[in-house]
Image (cartoon, rainbow, N blue to C red):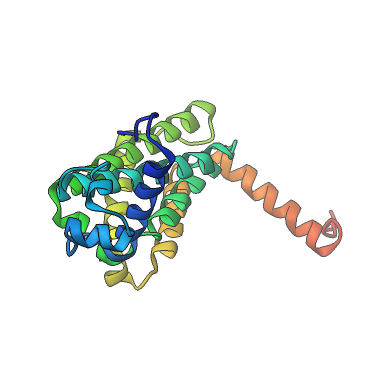
Length: 220
């Protein structure tokens, strides 16, 4: 993913963050460079630090959103040590980041070729990350043998359908609920029997702790 140059000034960084926040909240198709400069309370010459055309400014802001989102998602996933928890955290973090984007922003991205290409590239990268996490789980025995590329492609396609609103229209689920269901579907489908057994043991232990002791043994 393209990143802002390390030499970018604090003012440049602040302006880019403000621009990204504006686009996330309201979309970008309706704005001219003059409109953007007015909303950000800067001159057009200052805005030119981000790009000398509406096209370039748009792409830079969309890149910024996905760059920041990727950092947050990876941090959430890295905090988990178990393969299934890592995938659940990853998908949940993706949902949380996308919730920052308004419907207008998502619609504008879909209609803007360059911005859509950024979104599609990040979706492909997300699918690859899921594939890698599945492969890790298979290697450790946490997941059964599955075709990782197929599962990752299915996850990526579903992510696009969730964000486009298609899943909500067909099922009535919110985006957060849909991602929860996606994580559950994927994890229950790829966990190994050994992993399922461990989860059942954990649930039984939690139940015993809740009732204040071990269940009464049945007479033999």
